[in-house]
Length: 211
Ligand code: HEM
Image 1 (cartoon, helix red, strand yellow):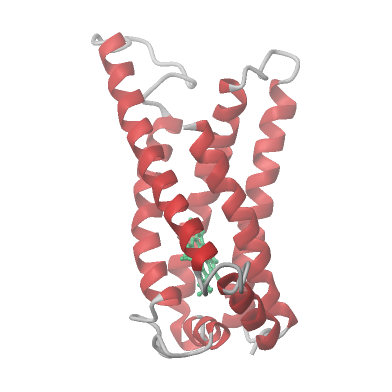
Image 2: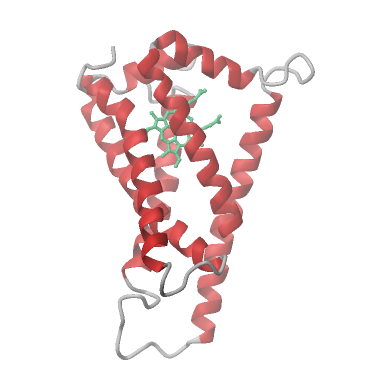
């Protein structure tokens, strides 16, 4: 879970930084999208590197979900009788629910997100348009409900990451009594930066700051 999770956090950081290019104008954003598709050209044909990265991402998502399901099955077998008294940190508490429900919400959001900004199926500008035009039309003030969907999904991503990063620290064996607070704070900080960075472009477009 930790390895695939870390790969996806890496993707999210780069994706968030790339999205912020919309604040530097449509050309800056389109140039960046073009650069992604022409990485290592002419050595590698058009879109080769991006396609490899996309395949890696799909593999990471599938393995991450598989690890989540098999870990939860293993935990169930290890303790077939439920706890009588529940503690906050225990399995099946807030964290487990937010991770399962949040994970599913993120997958559903991804389907919408790809249909919207990658394939243009649910986007007013359609597929044959510049990426910046799709983005700006997609979050047009009249489509405030799309921004709301993104808002909810990104908050879910943030909650998922906050707990996921903290769990990864524990997996790495970094957590102990003295470091716990600092590690929890770091997980919260990384998640907060990603949430703010992701929400900035849609909100700026819907509120007319970016046109
Ligand atoms: C909320 C703000 C977000 C915005 C404005 C945004 C914007 C975009 C855009 C414009 C594209 C298409 C890029 C292109 O055609 O070159 C894209 C693709 C993608 N986004 Fe997002 N995104 C956001 C959040 C997220 C989140 C939270 C995730 C993951 C949980 C995510 C995952 C993806 C994936 C997997 C792709 C496809 C990448 C590819 O196939 O190359 N995005 N996004």
